[in-house]
Length: 126
Image 1 (cartoon, helix red, strand yellow):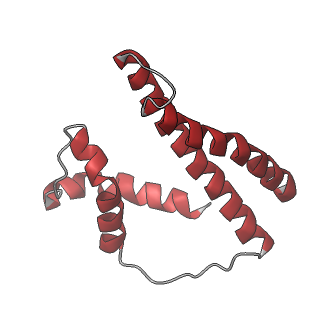
Image 2 (cartoon, one colour; image 1 turned 90 degrees about the vertical axis):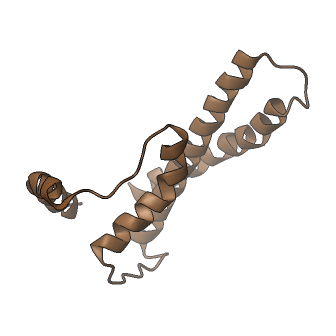
Image 3 (cartoon, one colour; image 1 turned 90 degrees about the horizontal axis):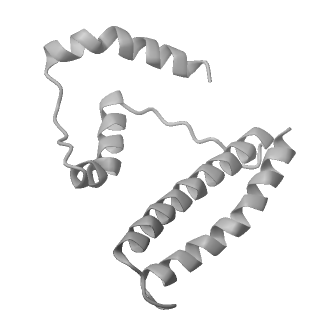
C-alpha cells in the first residue's frame, strides 16, 4: 500500500512542477496579455497548485516515515509554543483577509475547553 501511494505521489509531482513553472510566467504576462479576471483565476490556480504540492510532499514524508527511510525526531513542545508557531505561520494570510488574531480570554477558553480536549484526544488516534 505504501509503495502505491508513494508511486502515485511521485507521478503527481511531475505535472505539479510543470504548473509551478508555467503559471508564474503566464501571470507575469511573459507569454502575452491577460485580462484582470484571467489573472485572478490564474492566481487562484497557482495557490491550488501550491497546496497540492504541499499535500503530495506530506504524503511522501508519511511514506518515508512508515518505511523507516526518514527518522522521526520527537521533541517535547509546550502546547502554547505549538499554537504560537501555527498562528505565526498563517498570520499574514489571516490579516490579508481582514481576520484579526487575538488571544482568547480565559473564560472563553473554558467554554471551548471540552471541545478542544475531545479534538486532541481524537487526533491522538492517528
